[in-house]
Amino acid sequence: MKNEPEDYSIDDLKRDKTEPWDGIRNYQVRNMIRDDMSINDQAFFYHSNCDVPGIYGIMTINSNAYPDYTAFNKKAKYYDSKSKKENPTWLMVDVKYKRKLKKPITLTELKSHKKLSTMRVVQRGNRLSITEVSKAEWEYILKLEKK
Image (cartoon, rainbow, N blue to C red; front, side, top):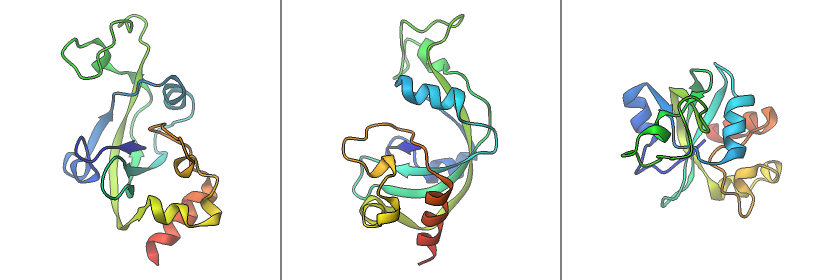
């Protein structure tokens, strides 16, 4: 799950413990939140659009999907006039801090490993803020942290 660190970082999540993952405005990602995420699933916290993009921590999905209330707030950054409380377009989940990685696994490092070449996050043109990680990729990345 990607976020810009100047907006909200792994250190912010460490401080806050649990936080809603709001602002998703992509139907494919919304569907992943709705259909594929379950309480206690784990996710990497990926810093994007920064000097050193990469995986900086691990978090746990702490709720089922529920309406993203920022879509209803006209003053909110992610307001969407088409999304209605009685029929919400956008969803979010709560995430809970688990830990920071011992060392960040940078995008450059991820791209340098053939075993990770099919990960969506390393694909050219990938703009999705949430992408799936296979069990094998997850385990391989955790081994990289120990090197």
